[in-house]
Structures are given as structure tokens and as C-alpha cells.
Length: 330
Image 1: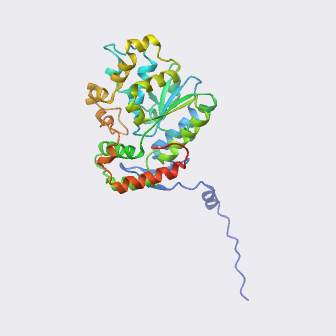
Image 2 (image 1 turned 180 degrees about the vertical axis):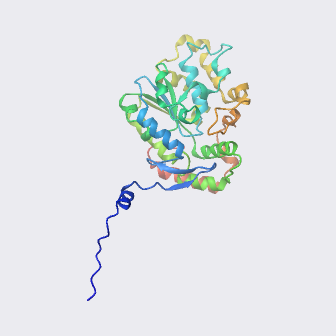
Image 3 (image 1 turned 60 degrees about the vertical axis):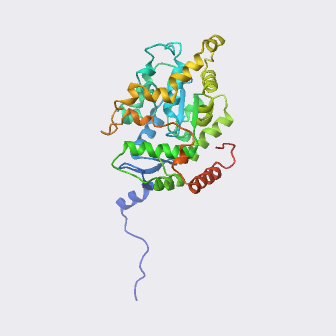
């Protein structure tokens, strides 16, 4: 008689430990550079940015009077930083003064980022505690990746979005300038973007998180569109000033301060600044990014110079479907 074989396997503590460990998140190719992207709480991030996001969640201590500028990458972040800095600091730094900080510093140097200090400046999130209140901060993190206390404590958030096709084109150009030795064809970048695979993507989830928060808390979240700001920057300056708690006074408006802010922070003006034309940012892992990389064209509908009609329609259909009739349109 042949003995039946038991289904019970010998105890293997090492194997049991391995089976209990969390599964490794799937990885996808990054557009450029050596690192791949993997999902961190539903968001595609590189390994370094995943660590930064986790540290922000664990250690960032928001304050009720914090103002957080939030954007998906390449949605006008540099411009928004400049406008926000000029508006909130106009009593300390008169807009027309010859030594205004925006004349000698990149906007990135004047508005601290939540997650980037860990990568750019190599200091912990706790050093944000040294900034005086009210703090003006910036992030590319989607809303679900921010500490929940950001919402419960009442921080104000300004979110700037942009036409997704223009975002794709701007991001592709930026990445090619930064990672010159690792070129990704535009067609391949387009397909990855359509799949939602891009740094901080999918873009539609990023947009939706802040859009939905705005619909429930319009007094705490200001949701702006890049195209509309470009078309009427003056009125948006006044909207921002009011949202920040320091509306433009009648006297200020009569003196032309709104137009002065628009001129100082215009893309064309920022781009021609000496600090923007030369020099580099703090190295990322030994990779120095030229300051000029942050300023390309800033044009609306630049996607028309890079996409076929078929590609544009495909991405439009995807965005429309993913936004699901929420009311956000482009």
C-alpha cells in the first residue's frame, strides 16, 4: 500500500516571514533617468520621492495659517510661486523696489517645498518648523498623500491646474533637458501619460483630489486654471490676495500695484532675469539643473506643435472619461 502524501509542508519560518511581507509594488519605466516609477499610495513616484512623501506624512506639522501652493508638475509652479510671494510680501518688499527678491532669486528659492528639501537641500522636514508664520509652502503631492491634519487644521490651499496636453509637452521637454543622456521618444511618453504613468500621476487623480476638496470647502481651497490666469492675470492677482487674507485695497489698486505684480511676475520678465539665465539649482544626487530649464515658453496650446490630431483626441477622451463629469473641463 502506498501512503498518501500529506499536504502539510514542513515549517519554514523564513518562508513564512517572506509570505507575510507586503508585496513589492509594480514598477514601470520612468520617462527619463535611471530610476523606475512605482506606486506609493496610488501615486506613481520614484523611490526617492516615495521616501520624501512618507517623511512628509510622518513629520510635517501644519499650522492653521499655512498657505500651501499645490500643483501637478509643469502646471505653472514657478509662476504661481512668484505671484504668491509678491502678493503676500508686498508690505515688506514693495513691488517696484530695485532690490526686490524676485529680481535676484528664483521663485523656487523663495517658497519652500514640502517634499523637495529632502532631495535638494538634504535637510529634514522638521526644519520647516524654523520658518516664521504665516508660512508659504509648495508641493506636488496629491491631496491624499498630504497629512490629514492639513485639512483638519484648516490650512489654505491654492491649486493650479493646466490643460493636460500642454502639461505632457512641457514635462517631456523639461525631462529631456534635465536627463540629457536618457532620451524617451515623445510617442512613448505620450502612451505612458495616457496610461497614467508619469511622476506624481495619474494626472486626473491629482486634479480630482483637489477639485473635489474645493467643491466641499471653497473657502479653504482655491482651484485655478493656468489658461484662465494667463488670459486675465490681474483679476487673479486680486483673487489670490483676497484668498491669502490681504485683499488689494482701493489705494493699492489706484497706485497700479496689480499691474506692477503682473509685470514683475510675468513669464517673460522672470525668464530674462540674470538668475534665470545662468547658474544651477542645488544638485539632485550630483545632477545640477540649470536655472534656465525652469523657463521654456509658458505658452497656452503649445501641444499643437507636438501632437497629431489623433493623439490630441485620444488624450481628450481619456481625461474626459477619468474626470467623470465632475464639472472640471478643459
